[in-house]
Image 1: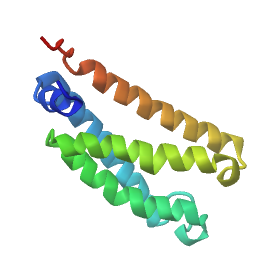
Image 2 (image 1 turned 90 degrees about the horizontal axis):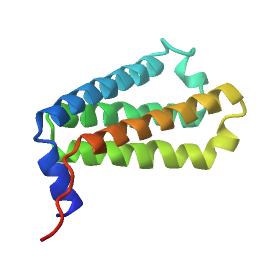
Image 3 (image 1 turned 90 degrees about the vertical axis):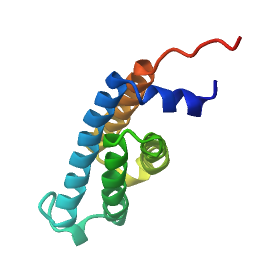
Length: 136
């Protein structure tokens, strides 16, 4: 059984569907956080923030909204978007630019904790999926 088929079958299970809905709420809360940042309600005026934070706000705001909707509707593309967003929009940029973008140790620890949280959430998702059957 391919990974795609395994995930497609798994997201139809009630326990996985509930977990995806909970995860969708977290994505929507992340979108609200980015919207608050753009509006200047969090962390001061948006234009005074470094360019990489402004870019992240503009990219992650719509991404979180769309991925949250896909997860809420238990769509396969929502799960693919979730994994892609964690890897391509967060893990890779953070790990490549951590040393240069964050001289503040507290911010680095926050970013590492956020990546660890995403890893745990993806791990729980994989554990909730049914066990793969041996080809036979």
